[in-house]
Length: 461
Ligand SMILES: Cc1cc2nc3c(=O)[nH]c(=O)nc-3n(C[C@H](O)[C@H](O)[C@H](O)COP(=O)(O)OP(=O)(O)OC[C@H]3O[C@@H](n4cnc5c(N)ncnc54)[C@H](O)[C@@H]3O)c2cc1C
Image (cartoon, rainbow, N blue to C red; front, side, top):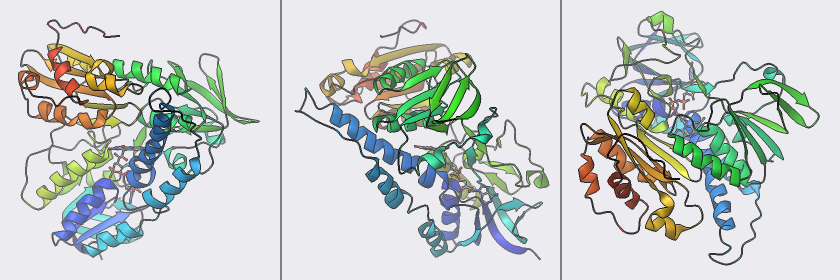
């Protein structure tokens, strides 16, 4: 006999936990099913521990910038405090007791196990079936995607999950993947003295963002002592006496004590019974409508959806689904100004479209770009002022469709652009704002004032 409940949330990661808690607090009978840790990737293996590493490596970098500006400094990195802080403050030693109790205190019913859709309105877990009368929410997130490289399964390697648990650093580290995760972790470890090599198949690192950001990052990472191998693929991997040997398709080899695989994510949609409710992922992801519905009384949120990939998106979607399930739908999902930040030093913030994406959409584009180091604040800041602000305008409508804010506090500066892009604020309004002097965000006005008269982007370095 199935147990009748109001809502079943399958996967209690960032999105699922947020939604399940809100629904339970509102008095619905909610079952939350989680096979691993309530909270998901972000607090235990993703955002939070990696940002603690980055906070620590930023401190080291700032310390090393002291000579010539504020005295002498000798910085001696020690990974011990970082590893301890991650264990204690970030992940509670990978224990979700607090999160489970918080959900239960709000009235939720927690089930530890691997759930599976079992036909219309039903979810089974360990032989028990729940029948959801109001909603099923699929929020099963992602796992590290492991590329089919010959020999990889025969050697030990880290993904982000092992990387955040490390207590003793290797001397050398090869990283497969020069996207946000590979770059953030690579820079953090390099600044703690690890000799890092990043192998990226695309022609540049952080390939999904503006090429100017890739160029600045390549330069900064080089100064951090990181070796970047772009436009090259790992053909095979094998054990070596000192660790692992990565054979590249250009005939070169990379030897490292440890290998980190950071080649993207794979949605956890296999084996969860999608076929029992007539669902089929497209390009490996679910494609919900603007209320995150994927079927009759079924919703999907977070990284399993086509617009997911970030904690803030999962939480944003959870809020939309909450209102929909509660029968008071607000505005539907709008991703035009979707923000994203790569937390390297300098940070790379971006919202909306890149220049190339805008052109591909047939938009009559013009761009403006201002280098961080030539703004008053950037100049005052001195070392560590790498970066720029770039705006992408739809020239016909005179509104921004995209922006990149790379530099110190790049992620925080992004907010004004998210608002401008989403609310279609005329570029002229941004041009005539009073920007406090001397802030980094003052560069926003300078970049907008540099919007060129033609659609050819003028490089600034
Ligand atoms: C290294 C790294 C750094 C990151 N940094 C950032 C950042 O700085 N900012 C940012 O916004 N995002 C960041 N992200 C991305 C962010 O972690 C994800 O976008 C976010 O966790 C997605 O939330 P989710 O709820 O969709 O999925 P998840 O957090 O993946 O949670 C899904 C949950 O479902 C569970 N589950 C799966 N299948 C089942 C099943 N059949 N039954 C029961 N439970 C199941 C899983 O165990 C998991 O706990 C980072 C990711 C990584 C890997």
